[in-house]
Image 1 (cartoon, one colour):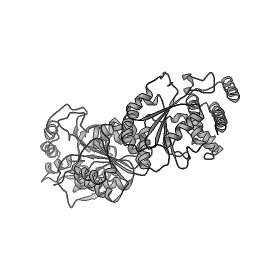
Image 2: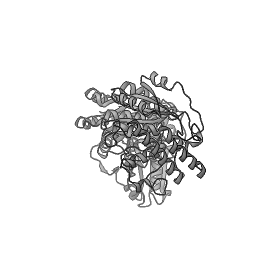
Image 3: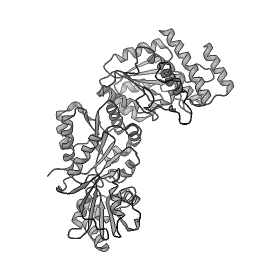
Image 4: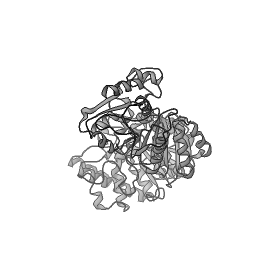
Length: 298
Length: 253
């Protein structure tokens, strides 16, 4: 069983092994699979320390000089502390730099709001040049890093912590995975990130369509094909603030948004400390709460 | 060579003055303080715009650079005339569509860190960044200072245009050099209007294998009596009378 971080960095290691232009910068964040890269290619690995602005600037210079740079750090700090530099240095020159942010949603559940990733999607979405991935498992994590490597444009990948179920044999399309058949006149769920696993368990045995949006930007056109079809309900479930996340993105491309129901965290900085599941339950995002909501709609 | 540089500096100030007056756009004070450094770089063996990279942190002083690039044949007269016009391709900040320019300017405090990355990537022969002293108030400069001294294999030069004025603030930091030294960087100071001193110091620093900081002591608005050391001329439009007086002083100076 492989931690999602290791799945991503294992893939990045493979890419970096073949390509000497791959450089990894970490703002003092660690991952088991990262150590292998550091050991074998020490001249292509930099621990930048607790200095986000300089990390972005150094990456910019390397990328302008022909390198493909991958930055790894904790989400709120590496996205927002140095956001203006991400915009004016990385994005305005469309450089091959990928920011891998650790701690999607409430991954750091005992650390309080400074460590929660509940504003980063909205913030990073403002950047016209930025592609955003929000993987839900090892497979989408590897898809994300490979896409970023091939595209050579600014990318942001939100990474969770831990081991999530492997998902062989799914049906994937550009930016989404469809897990179960869409019910145009029934109840469906659109979700993103590791919340997918809770959603799948929540609706076991029920006839509910599930779509996992693993690429948030550019937002997959195909989602609107689903949400504009039929007269059923679509529940949008995300471990993110009710402002600026998946719901807003789905709503934007849906003609009749009265059929959309939002299940998200409140638009607040959450001074809640506890296990992730405990906090999610408090805010109506537990497996049981989702099931109850679905049954209500059916 | 020094005589040639003097003549070039004079011509450059006059040309920048003309364009700034015609278009009412141009950070004349900021441009005149760095003119002599720019001339020393572009018109000697120190800097080759086809092989080297200059990161103008203080991008608002772009007018003299546009004029130099015009003089050297990289920007033709038609393009130069677009400065300050609607839809013109030369803005008050640089972007990568300008011939020989590889970096978008406008945000302060960044070129030092970018320069370190460029030095290590080793795509360009010479890597040089020019910042203002006000710009050195940005914390990002000091994040880089700490990193550069430990990691940069040099040579990479950070030139500080110390004209001691911001937009409304006086900046007189006698400790600026000591601050960079405290971070482990090699620091040199030069008279920013003495071409020989500038040339010799930059030549030495480009030959090192460590990064260095060259503090150029300058006068904002250098060359025009009513502009010198006057913060109003950070970016100001001249009256016809002021323009004529400035022009006369520069021609006779």
